Image (cartoon, rainbow, N blue to C red; front, side, top):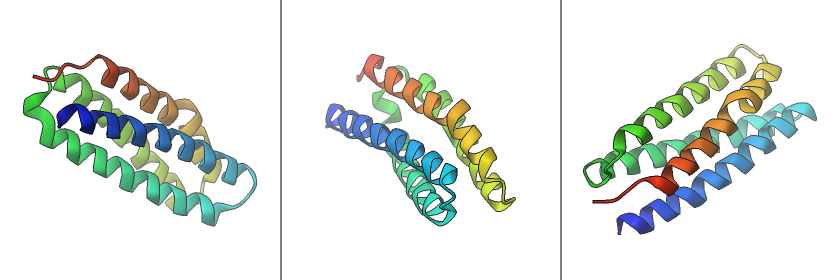
Length: 117
């Protein structure tokens, strides 16, 4: 069951990367309402991933790696929310470009290397 969950998380992270790039495009096109809606979906997906990993902590040999990367993604998402609240959409696009997509891709790499006990 754990390997199936990891596969599902992998697919969700790939979708989140696509969504983050979509948010960036919507900001560049000036459609902030759609960017905010998709960002809310991104956050919901992340919360689901985080909760799933917490539930799997005992089964993952290298949980600390996952936990550290999850914390980085969470920090970027928090910065994105604060930037939207401050009405700084270009800052959101910058965080997505500089941090979030790279952190999500790194989480994918970690997923491919972790062991399940």
